Amino acid sequence: MRVGGTPYRTLWAEGRVVRAIDQNRLPFDFVVVEWRTLEDAAAAIRTMQVRGAPLIGAAAAYGMALGVAEDPSARGLVRARERLLQTRPTAVNLRWALDRVAERVGPLPEAARAEAAFRVAAELCDEDVAVNRALGEHAGGILRRLAREKGTRAGTGRGGAPPLNVLTHCNAGWLATVDLGTATAGIYLAHDQGLPLHVWVDETRPRGQGARLTAWELASHGVPHTVVTDTTAPHLLARGAVDVVLVGTDRTTATGDVANKIGTYGVALAARDNGVPFYVAAPSSSIDFALSDGREIPIEERAPDEVAWVSGRTAAGEIAAVRVLPEDSPTLNVAFDVTPARLVTGIVTERGVAPASREGLAALFPERAG
Ligand code: MRU
Image (cartoon, rainbow, N blue to C red):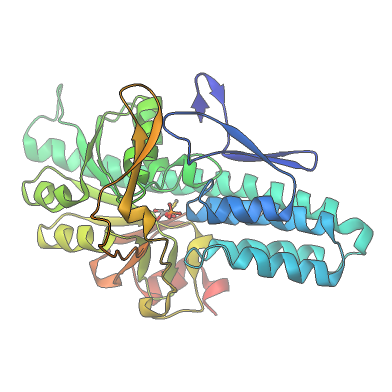
């Protein structure tokens, strides 16, 4: 995607230096950081300089490459994998990417491992972009169909068709991937093809990925959007202001249960109660065919300070953090929830749209379903 007219990916390597857009600085500052060591990559994932399931996977792959460059022995490979696995528990893309690198690099002589690991990481990044494009075409098809139906319903088939109102939660945009995004891929492709769209962007407390990142992306790309507090989404759904919900996922089970940013489950419940379709954009790297029940998905809990403190830009232009809770009030910061398959209208993958069920996912990915 373009930033100020220049095309960017979220992550790339120049030689053995990895560069990434620092998402903790957005939307106020656009800063590219450098990782030169395994520890740089691990810390960047942990502190959410890079975040979003597919990007966590890509970053972990480069983390492995940096680790192997430091120590190409079998012990070094294990150490790098273990270190990166500790960074964030919920997105299964992390383990998927680490396994990909380890499987390709492990059988090689030590002297060839680092170069091969960087090559595999770069391939994985290219693959992510291709997967998102394919997924976006399928999601775009859904959006076009819903827009046609809405135009018909509203009786405005010709001329001023009303925009299709899409609601999204968190950031499943290009910043959450190497490029294009998962949930946003369909939005960008449909928008670029002239489909009138408007996106409701859930703020996504406590870290504000919707308000800070999705809104910045959509604004940069010229997609009409409105940021709302998380608690507003059910009201919008009840008022008929949302035609479709489209979110990403950090881990989806073989049976179609979907872990995504905290708050997604509530949106899904309200969507079901109001008869609004709820779609999940899930590249196959985020489907965990080893799990059959969403309750088995490890759910990350993050630091209490993320709830207690809010940061932003002051009127004077400085970035500042302020405490928004009484000093003595404890907090709980659960980062993800699980939406059961029964609330999911469909899972949009790079191979097409599957019903949220074991049979539906297995039909699209028979080689992985076992
Ligand atoms: O904690 P984050 O910001 O890494 O959480 C990200 C999400 O929950 C996204 O919706 C998910 O990773 C899908 S990204 C394409």
